[in-house]
Amino acid sequence: MVEDARRLAAVLVEGLRDQAIAADVAHDGLEAAAKLAVNSYDVVVLDRDLPGIHGDTLCQMIAGRDDRVMVLMLTAADAPVDRVSGLTLGADDYLTKPFHFPELVLRIRALARRRPAAAPATLRALGVELDTIRRTVTRDGRPLDLSAKEFAVLEALLRASPAHLSAEDLLEQVWDEHADPFTNTVLVTIGRLRRKLGEPSVIATTPRVGYRIAGGDAGQGTDAGQAAGR
Image 1 (tube, rainbow, N blue to C red):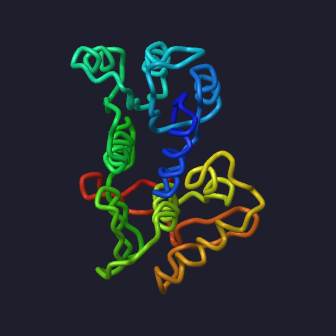
Image 2 (image 1 turned 60 degrees about the horizontal axis):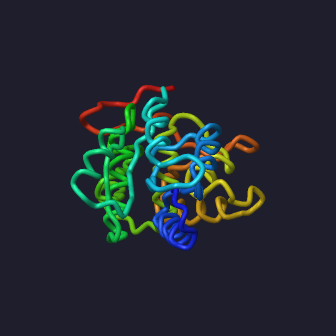
């Protein structure tokens, strides 16, 4: 989230985290460029009129990167010519202020799915089926009522399968860059998720390594076939 209005940025980032979208914030173009140099992001929500490096220049920098990051311009400039110029600069979507927060969340998730090499929308393993578009999870056809964080942890593990994810990996992917690495929040969330998923266990723990989907690969959406082991 690149937004120089600090109060707005804080509200938006808090709302995204409540939706289990791991979000960092930068208040000017220079800070955003520095974060982009060291962190991997799926989507950048970008204001245009930024100090340091103007949003238009930053958008062009992002569009020129090898590791493609999707850009959603979020700006008060709402004239048709502004929208056209923003998309011409390399933005993938354009949302004008004021806006409805649920629409912002839906657009971010849609862009993440469109990112090149993004994983399929449906992930499956051991009778569990997770639909990233409808935000639903079932096991053996039985709907599961997961919190936003539980859903995001399960999604991260399914996408990574058969690899392990450490607690630190999950903190970075599901929470944010400032999450306390010594907290037990991952352990607690995994415990609740296991209880809701039921038996046989879906999530395996390897001491001093991390968590993984038990038994091997996670099958992916029908359009993609079965996921190959990495």
